[in-house]
Image 1 (cartoon, rainbow, N blue to C red):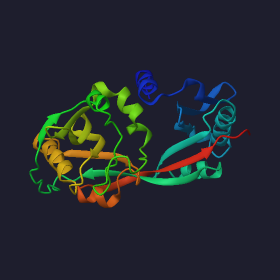
Image 2 (image 1 turned 135 degrees about the horizontal axis):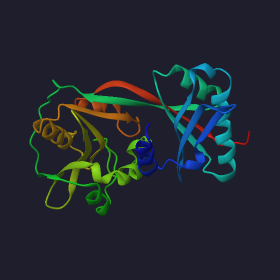
Image 3 (image 1 turned 30 degrees about the vertical axis):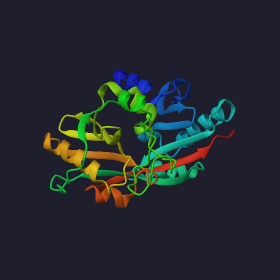
Length: 263
């Protein structure tokens, strides 16, 4: 973490400085908690304790201090998205009363997964976050091919929420399938080096995913071969549908949640 990256996290993730804390042993900093805050809740974005000071209650104390503050100031919901591979972090949140709510799955689109993309009616056009927001489409519709807009209350990870997409809009590109009357499907993405990360994926037409497959094929045609979409909540897009689009699971995060309470 650099000062520049920390400043970006304040803008992009709404890291809230009053929800960030440092634990000390004498004059030595030995633990840190970085919290991001929105009206819907607080995210424990980072928590770490120096290896020489673990198993001494510092992590528990940091979480308890954050909970005590939020019990007074709100919002009461606290969440954490913990990598599956970090067993000590999972144990810490469980020991502090956090409950696992969901598995957020990381997906990759393998290079050799070139499913045939049937040509559909409509035009493939560039689209921006502002375009989608202006048309009331940013995060408003479910991605299930069997559902229509408004049927479900989607859940997305913190880094792909509407707030984050809006904050990062200048670095996000997009493609959409559009008819003469409306946008029928879209994807938003960010390219870093050789990797393309999809940050939003939506279909508004019950077409079995044909329009989204067409957009994914367009990414591939433009040379974007390393395509991934991280932290997909099962209520956002089902595993079955992600696999139908050609994606394969590649690890994940556990979503933990708790209600703030005074220590």
